[in-house]
Image (tube, rainbow, N blue to C red):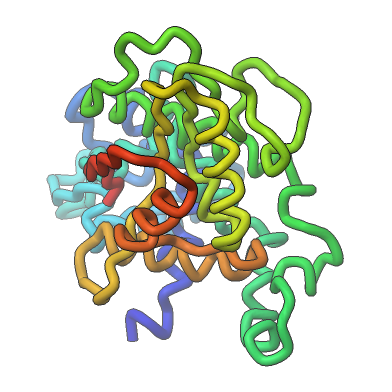
Length: 297
């Protein structure tokens, strides 16, 4: 039955984010535990719905059943009843709390639950049978043309992931000029499939999974031609195993893999072996694959 009603969890998460539930609890202080009434009192300028606390309680209760929020039962001092549930931030929900840089995984949830994206799934079956990109079949244009929500998502995700990469990977040391292909620090006009600006190192995050293998190969060849003999190409992508696994990481990557199929022609997640084949095919040598665990739960 969890599979049948799987959309309930993601939609409830999105509602909790829009209501500011995670930020409200976090702003109450470290280890804070708030009841639904206390949370409701901090939503925007307040709510005129007298049933809001009761309705709201059912959302974090669901999230707590998935260990997204932590829940405990305490004596109810508000109305004299026996007890009430109170909720606190846990390891998973912490990723949806706006941090000191103003970012969280909230925009990524908003993107995946956006009506524009959700409508793509209605065309997945037909795309398999008839061809085409589900997103394009629905909207008549490519997903990259819907930039605002997408760019906000990538900005937030990159901010979170890059901190972990810099902590775990020391390969950026001694690099004088880093070219971020598909990034957005300083813009250089052009087509990355025609050429890539030269630098000591080339960095690409979540670019290859948008494209067919032949496009990936061409892009990697351009990266190879843009670096000196002692240069490097740094690629940040998810790895999908050849044999399906039941770990949290593989489940997440497998979900994104199918999502890529609805958004981009030929877009997919790659296995370790597939990445190595692409890299060697592009002329890259001295390959070093660092598997960094950046798991959001």
